[in-house]
Image (cartoon, rainbow, N blue to C red):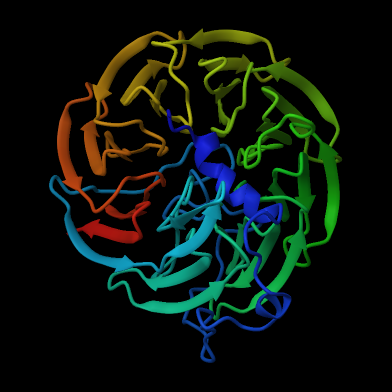
Length: 425
């Protein structure tokens, strides 16, 4: 059987639907042994990034900024060495009546960095704070199910979704939960904060805007993607919303890209991608880019003004699970055809491809004219962004599904075999 992201995710959705052994109510209410709250707060720097989860000197959210166009800071060394690795515990569960063990970090699973600390969620149901240079666990918080959402940091708080349906706000200095919001279904979507508002999507089929300080809902807009016939684990909108100039973009299982007004949640326009679209939209100039799965295996460019399709890129009918990176009018995106693709953002024409051993679900990062990404073949790669020439690779203990976090040339990334790595000099 061909493995797709939809197949992989069905196990987590079955858990949410009650088809896996649930955690006892008292287990959800009482602190879990894996929850280790700090009594002495970490010495975090004062918040200096204003009203948004956006920085130019660190990575505070999935893809670095609300438009999804910031990928980290260098310089990246020519030959990074492993500085440390940490083995996350396993999460045994049941999938289609058979035992399955979830390990490590999932899709999209990107870490964020604030001060001297790295924050990342795991599919072993634990949210971590690591000392960035040593891998020491400073605090941990156990969720009800898997953390697959990438974390967002704002005002020295950590925001993250979970397969237990909750969006959580956690004190970045101690690991104490401040509030949580029940979305009613899995929440793989990664949050972002813009101008003092938190935006997120989810498998409930709603685009949402919340107050990041209180968790109070400001507005929600139904974008569908749920209903009879939709498979477990792939409903609603699993994309992480892109925000730019008062516009909110998300896409759905139904193959619809939405442009929503951030003020009040009003739908401005809709465009068709043709199939389940889990890769997140990217806003670049006057255009928004999106990529769909098997039934409509295209990378699209749409006009932000009216949703008009400008071009589509199709290569070997490849499904896309990787969110594109766009730098200097070039798009870098991983394909289910085992290639990393480089495409002209203006024309949709192919520039180069790099072949790996397995599908590429991670979202590549482009820093210092180098492309950093992992593959399901268990290799972490660095390529020359200009011509796709391989510069370095590292064979890890298991396949990569997650997106790297890169700050000052140091790379933090997890695998689906349980290990979380730090590479640098």
